[in-house]
Image (tube, rainbow, N blue to C red):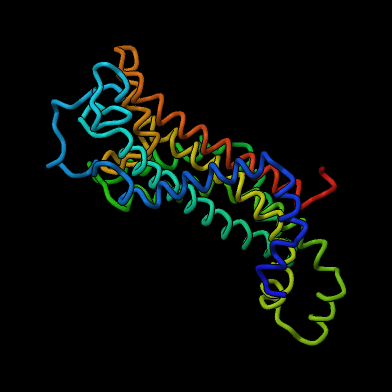
Length: 303
């Protein structure tokens, strides 16, 4: 029996096939991610090509409207860019920031959680007290504070990878506590298991025990947290971009499109805000629903 066959016959896949909500959520998430990845191929226009833009095409309504243009299915925004193309490219930025933030938070939180749970003593106290302090501040406040500090100290008009890296750092730093506390609790249980005691007895080093033996047994809850945090990271990125301290203007995301549309919402250009907002809502909801199913499937006691 191959690995693929065993995976398809596993209890997890059986639960997935018996949960329509999880299947729909996974299909929507995969469709949006695929659309973002294939944006250069499927986007009708290149929103970053100045030669293809015309200020005369700005604020065109969707194609089905009487004043619409068949070239622009969902209309255009204030600079005359095709909104559908801008959304596909913006979705790439939002997903890239979300995934990178979650990966950074996962690596940092899991590492500190392993150290705190296995070493104990002053290391455990130091890491957990830092976690307790950070837990008193909302994640969006931490991300907003760090992003604001960078914007205030960086050179005027900074753009490129620097602001994006800082955005990933600020969002990821606000999530590491959940991973650290979860992994620490699991390590405290696993450290007293027979297989860990046997590994210590035969002289295996502590890092090897943590990475090869304990880590695989604590990854289930970590993956659940990562899935749910992905939706939160995307929403936080959109919020920061909406407030003007997130993604630079040269790299539009869903949040920047919503912010642009909000400036013209009451003048009748509703589509600039509505469509990116709908995509953001569907993406966050589908990832959250998939994360909820994964949590229940990996921990039947919660079912």
